[in-house]
Amino acid sequence: MSRKLIIDTDTAGDDSTAILTALHFFDVLGVTVVGGNISFDQMVENALYTLELAQTDQKIPVYKEHPDPIMTLEGDRHQTEERIFASDGMGGANFPKAQQRPEDQHAVDFIIESIHRYPGQLEIAAIGPLTNIAMAIKRDPSIISQIKHLWIMGGTNHAPGNINAGAEFNFYTDPEAVKIVLHSGIDMTMVTWEQALRHAVMYDDDLADIEALNSKGSEFFLKVNLHTKAFEFKKRGVDGVTCPDSVTLALAANPDLISQATSYYVDIELKDGLTKGYNIVDVEGDLGKPANIRVVEAVDGAKFKQVLLEVLANIN
Image (tube, rainbow, N blue to C red):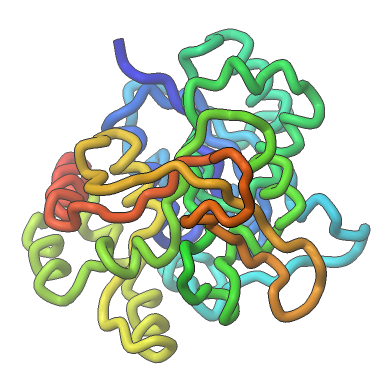
């Protein structure tokens, strides 16, 4: 029986590849969109277009909300990253609208309903800010014991962030949501930003291998992600495409790609200032608190590349 999954995403750039990876390996019940990378409505459109590209045998519904972090005041907006992903979030490809439209049901209601429908069977891949997941927990705490596993792309493990020196974008955008999720008791795995930099970057040789696939999937990947490559090189000297979201889905689908992982106590700073959104991974147990999440510490990058090639080759 295929593993059942909901993917919660702020669809831009590599998020789209993560969706394709999820469809390749899982029985995806739905895609929920959360406020994050770029304008909310555009992220919804990006999710719909990615699903249309995949041409799945069955309709994969897309659900909206929450467009902003938990503590955002009405009328305020969080920082978005068009500088990385371009205004459309897809590298300036400006794809046409998909025929499929989003569902009327609220994303959080769909998450809760699906967990109750498949108790102990449903996994969630959260590759954007954790707002939807936290709000589902607050609305119905009974789901905590019924989630099979939560895969989180976010945070760092004693490494520089990507939105600023101290924090990773998903955790920085809604730290209150991260706090709720980390302390929920859900069985969780965390794939951090620096792991993507170390093990999930597609350099020129890798991109040439992707181009050589000559598939709709490979063409899509290059259109969407090369804008990100230019940004990463200018920002931090990484001359390649970073794949934090797709590597998270690849690890979820293929746990043998995880070379090392340890359960630690992890917590996050909420206060405004230099360390807002910074998460501590208590690797030496100094805080004396029990572990609350498994943290991926090493990934088989070569095997991940093969998984990515397999996914992209399959989309024609």
